[in-house]
Image (cartoon, rainbow, N blue to C red; front, side):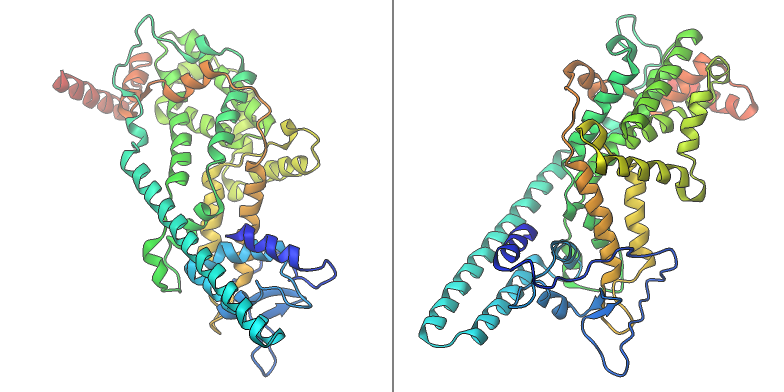
Length: 445
């Protein structure tokens, strides 16, 4: 819906017309979310601060979508409002209101029989657009419901309980022994999955949460299948890394596997693929892997220490955010798709939107929509959309990707069994856990 409105506005208006000002800094660290507009003795709607739109009633913000003789809406405003409006109003209701404003404006400019005829034509067009929109929304909802029925949880993906591999069973090194190549294939998968995420999917994060707005569209929000599917990929990759390490029997080969994944994570970092990098590190930090002290004692951990420094969670992942900002700046000035790649840690990206929503209210004490909040949310989503549009510069390797996406992964229980068989328990807690696991295995047999 955003694109047709945007195109119409641009076609009908001249560049010399004033636009809705855009925030340069949006929400700063000192912003409380309770914007107190300087309204003097009268209520102004919408409210501007330093030339920037910060709040307004729903009706006033809708009016800002429609061009006039001396104004047309900025593309950024259109994107931000259409993205956030679903929190307050159904898309088809918004379309109807925009249509009413257009007709009212036309009536003010023209009179007579010819004007009535044109208004009738406009009404028919709006009615048809509304029907098409409702059909599209219904089809999308039905499609997602079908996918929801057939999708499987991540733990069902080839999960096995065998702790020792068969002699003919492959491992990742038999499929790809070059860390750079594997990092490139992981990046290919990441970009492919990111391409399935749309702005409205990300806004479901806001729509699903309780807020001060008790609106009727709150109960029929779209399912977040695309977000869950991408999050499941992260979990699968983490578990695959842990599986590949824990199921190796010999310590020397296990050490080589750990060092291989460290190199893969490092190459992911260099590419700008932070999501795969974090998934790999998470897999190696799982307890069944982390407890393999004899293995880690043989690993050259200097490179791994650097990676963990980048992903250090202290100060709200300050080191990672600095690296992400550097990758984003590189992307803006890049001449090749290879340098444009930015794949953020997705669960941190989601959490940022979540906290923006929780910390800053949807409405101000005066009842107006806190548009300053939605400027910032839309800015972050727009950055994500810019990054996801990058065309992957790496050629797809079907053999490697098939392994990454279909190789069996151990359950958490199986990982601990394999870990204890590789390196026995070292303390009373581990011995109790190992005893419990063996009893469970015997009972199943």
